Image (cartoon, rainbow, N blue to C red; front, top):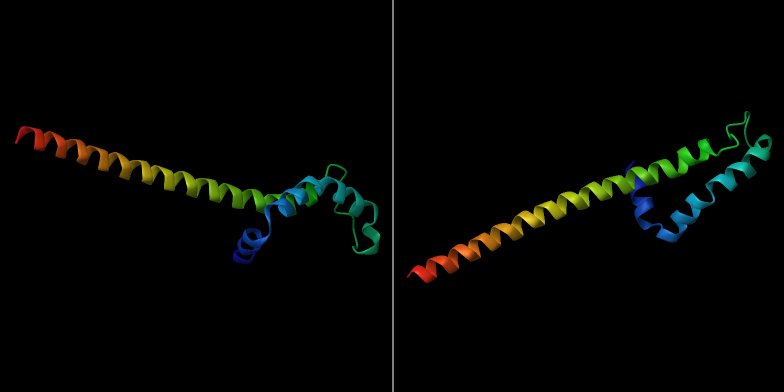
Length: 97
């Protein structure tokens, strides 16, 4: 899993997206020629096998990145609001003096 994360991090984004875009076409090509490299046909007409093997891990990594970003943003918003409240309290305290 770590190797997959590192590979998906270092592979340029356009290559990942083109791989996802071409997954169904590649699945059809591999489905037509499966006898040259496999003992049974894993490639269905809708591209489920290849999409699961290629796009599935990329989607998992994308979801992890999204959740991490949301947590980071929530933490940043809390820090910002605390600083804002401290600033308002400091202004109010200085106004009272």
